[in-house]
Image 1: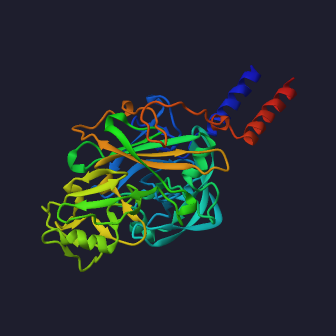
Image 2 (image 1 turned 90 degrees about the horizontal axis):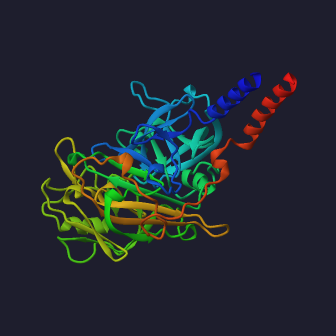
Image 3 (image 1 turned 120 degrees about the horizontal axis):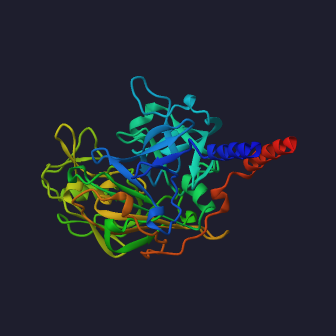
Length: 433
């Protein structure tokens, strides 16, 4: 009887190690680990409903800490970390508060992140409780001060869950969510993203981890490989784009180049010369005097845009080429900037996007890919919990694939913790004997 009681205590200790961890809320309302590990059955995939903040940003409910705190986080493929604003500002709620978490561990490490405007901001790293594929352990999160809110955290959010493929050398080794967690659990990873418009009334969208949602697209994927890290100064989910065409102008608005694909961006950022040429073909378009990187356009302007990727054109609905502000002023969603082209939610609302990764044995580098397919125009919110299907590989082949076996460490306690608990139970057993 006593041994049975000790066994029960041991089981509770094991279970406790998995509770109050970093997790995301899925379509069923359950909290799940935010892993892209490829899954073979639809029921095993993680379907995360996205909230649209007036088409400006897309976020999900995330919990972290012990006891957990629920944070609205924007999803990003260009940010490399889990980033949260802390501490709270007076009179505002929804911030992560490290003083209320028993699993918060401050560190002396810091790094830089890119802001939405293209600048940089400093972050401080801290250890926090995380859970990936039922495996609980401490990981690094990046904390910023609330004074940079608008330039890092899109409207309606207090954090960013980043799946970038870069790990700056000064950052902790376990801070990049994608690079740190997925390769230890699988050789293939994938996710699918569907973004919707508020006015369509079909929900903000769906982030499917471990596969793609077959009900959200039709036809085959057009796949583009991400250049390896050696060819890019700061790698991201960036792919070659061959052209941008506007019905009001002959020829392509751009000469090719690399484009970062990310729903984190509320607009499309291109070189100044390309943007000026584009709006020269839009009647009554004028450069903003207060924001010279943006153009004022008539709210009923007919702006027809097409991007060319890997020999295939992908069109942008004219509604996504125009952004209407609260005061009734309308701007074009194509804006000028420097560096990589940035293709954000105005493009992604018109296509279904798949992000894939194949992790090769060392020393071969991993292979990352981005693929586009024709998006299904929904007339009602989908039954998110039942519409996901098997993952696809980075080669762009759709359908069921063989599933790699996760590391056994993904399903058990870390060895030191397990051993310590076992020794406690054994000691009690010897004493009682």
